[in-house]
Length: 357
Image 1 (cartoon, rainbow, N blue to C red):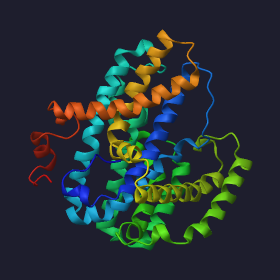
Image 2 (cartoon, helix red, strand yellow; image 1 turned 90 degrees about the vertical axis):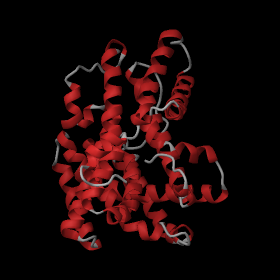
Image 3 (cartoon, rainbow, N blue to C red; image 1 turned 90 degrees about the horizontal axis):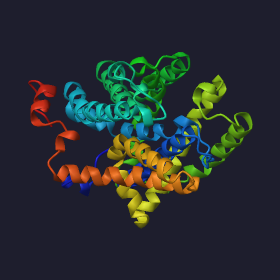
Image 4 (cartoon, rainbow, N blue to C red; image 1 turned 45 degrees about the vertical axis):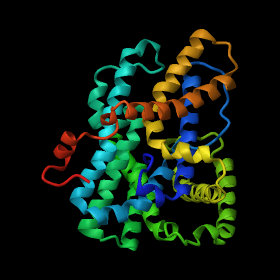
């Protein structure tokens, strides 16, 4: 995820990345809107059968595509501070806002929360709904950067070995405290982004025009058939055996590449431009959407409980996608930039003696 670019950054922006982010963030909002309706007792069917963790690896892969150039540009010390500024600052600000609203309206929520959850911001981010992602992404990127600056030196085979080791270990790491499971689980997807960066990022890249799809698509289809046969009703990774846990990786990676190819061709033809616009604001949608999907759902069930479930879902999704974008732009225009980016005083605190970027 990332914020919308500005100035010269827009000139060099790869539009397909925003298309890919747009596709994934729409699915994330869909899943959370659907889960909220089901939790409220609404009789609605799931139209997209994916393992719950299928969408987030795409964001880790995209982050991995940029991680080497960003880390080498800044150096480890400044890279850590830069990522704290861009990931952990909005995490603490918006997770606190989100949690405060949930506590205040706990009588109307599907999942009541108390003041003890403020402590979980530091120790147990999975308890703070969707915000665990920012915490886990920050931690995973810092682990990657530290290992590579201190030990691996961005060596490809060594990074692959570490990624495989961490993924296997994540099957046995059952705790979510300090995102330990998520770091080990998502690390290989970050590394995969690092591995394919040189193939995807050049302006004259032939990756999207190559014939590799002809060879990987049959593998993807076979894996999908196997998955539907072996795990027909499974939508959580902790319900899988070890074989399914391993098979999840190639299925997810090939699926991500298919999203990238589809996104590339949309960008090349300049089709579905609203999708690219949504993707360029994916961070703001992600950190705010549950506030509005929950609010719209409560209003629906209070004022129009007999509404068709599909209508509820579509309205909730639309609100969860577009209200955060409008609110972000409005708040920025009104001078509330500090809700999304640390003010200078905080930047100086984060960077200490270093010059903020």
